[in-house]
Image (cartoon, helix red, strand yellow):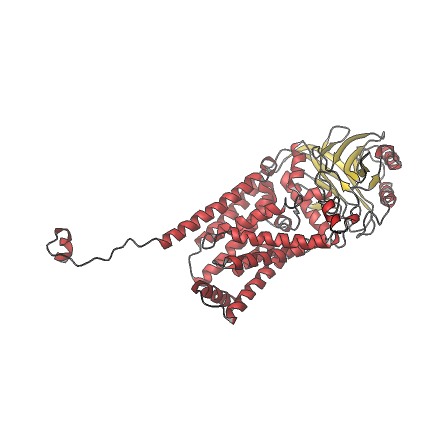
Length: 541
């Protein structure tokens, strides 16, 4: 019945007939179906994690659109789809800024409305729509204010059979495969209902299947035969708290308390503390450094510690860094966070927002972006890649660390400001993606959870619970070599998506040209019996 109503609405539009009550209901049904399809995609994300729903949701979105939606209808249904997906999948943003959450949800929804305007209708929509929607997702990963790469289709698929595609083309290629499969399945449903040939959809599914097969054969990095014994410390404590609510000394004290439970062991190589569990104006002369040095001396190993530090002479400006502290009390290596959380660690357009009365005082300081490669070195020279908290959602940060020689990746993080587990579970999923993309072990450490070890295949080990105090320890393999994603990055896939969208338009315009061309068949006129050129017709042969 729903399919019949949608077909009726399209028929009225094509004929230019006035909208009837039935047609209006059909259009509302299509809009609600697109919104529901977006909700299904959201449910494929962690913490819900029903990954097949992503493909099903996209397929239903294709059904809601149909082969020939009007431009306004297409934009509206694309926006409804994007809103259902991303307003739910990025619900954590509400806790940072309610106006920002509402604005971001509308912006993200509009992107998928614009994708419908950019994609062609007709039979070649089956390759044009996936390319257009994948391109706007690539845009969302970098715009505005550096992008918001959460609630992605890559995160949704990390527990499913498509996760291995990450080692070929990262999240962007996974995104295209999910869209391609979903739109093609929806188009095949439409073709079966209307009994029209659906071979472009079948070819599109075959192309996505080829990508999956190639991912099974792609390089995965190489083991060195050496390992690193790492203890990751989670101090524990309540979630949903801001730095202004809990004194830093309490957070540092919890991590010192947890660290004291570690027994000295010659096999242990390094202790990892989470992001910004130390907040000081000058770490080099702080009591915190002295206390950490005492523990490093007791255990005989270096510590990798997350420190937030004031910038001398620049009021209100801070750095967020991961430092290596030796048993001698020396700070031998440092990485300053490059990708900062907008409206969390800094306020974009602070002066303008303050002038219009926005509550920018809730983020009183601005973190300054670092400029060094995403890697630190242990005293023995072992290079460790570092993606601090938010940075683990960006494939480029881990990729940069591996290109700089990292043999293991660290993700010191702090999700204590958020209630629920949307951010925390999506962050574990992102650590899994980074592990698959780079062929490296990833060690995630958080003050209140989740902390975990992630293997190069994306398997999760020793994951902690929320708010518990714990120390997890594992010997992880040091690995070298590059996957195709580390070598190529995102740019070639974005370019290929642009080319695919362009080709879909060329083919669509060619179809339109053929349909509008006048027939070359000329109706024969009366035959002249004396005309020798028509002798065959005259003779009756």
